[in-house]
Length: 294
Ligand SMILES: C[S@@+](CC[C@H](N)C(=O)[O-])C[C@H]1O[C@@H](n2cnc3c(N)ncnc32)[C@H](O)[C@@H]1O
Image (cartoon, rainbow, N blue to C red; front, side):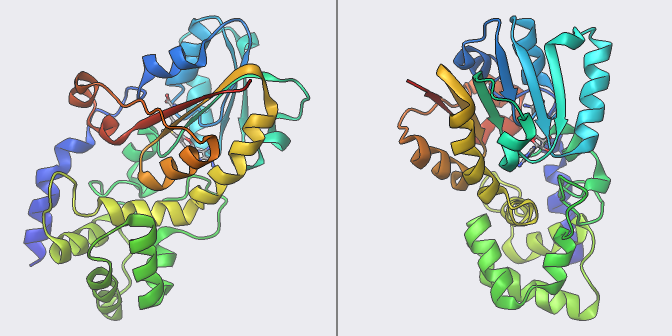
């Protein structure tokens, strides 16, 4: 049983590599209509979108909840010789957007590129990746009190079922909740590979997704309270936006996209090209929506 799970994990490992490009890079900066003005990148991450905004003449307030992301982006910008007058980096959660920017200035555009960054996925100690052994942590902000392993080991059967089904839209939620509760009676589940192996054994291989994708998604959303943060941030983004300014949101699953779609009453959707998906598999589930303030 154990090795069945491990084989599945080995088979899928290749899909976890090559995450270095920013998703929908060209489409995002085109949609922001970049000119010599200030933009907010609410999820600066590895800095790829922001560098391109600056390269095209814009200036960026770059926000990230993860202090490690800001440290690396600062280093990356220094190495690339980016003019320090063209960006300001701020650590914080975009759910506090107005407080973080502390200015009455209006912005020409606001970008949200949701989800995890390459740096986060590729750092095993952060616990985001089901293909790398690490603690089941998943906090984007290390100051948060609850890690994924706390949810997995403390949640009741019903809570786990609801977590997997609501936030992961996982078909095998009931069987998985039962399996987690059984497994932790022997010893707590504390690592990414333990959980990924358990999910693979219970749910088996289905389609193209790694079997643990949805469970990991559910845990990450819960740990970081991602949906509420997005709901709180969108109206603030609209408030700080100048007339004719644009908000661009790149999301990676239907729960996020639903929030964006309803908020902007938006119908038009931009998705990555076949070439981008081939070069950069993580982009396959990306959806971009653009809103212009009139
Ligand atoms: C997909 S990455 C962004 C990648 C970036 N656009 C690039 O081109 O490199 C998402 C980033 O947003 C950050 N993030 C996620 N939720 C956040 C929130 N509520 N507030 C601030 N930052 C957040 C994550 O820590 C991560 O670094």
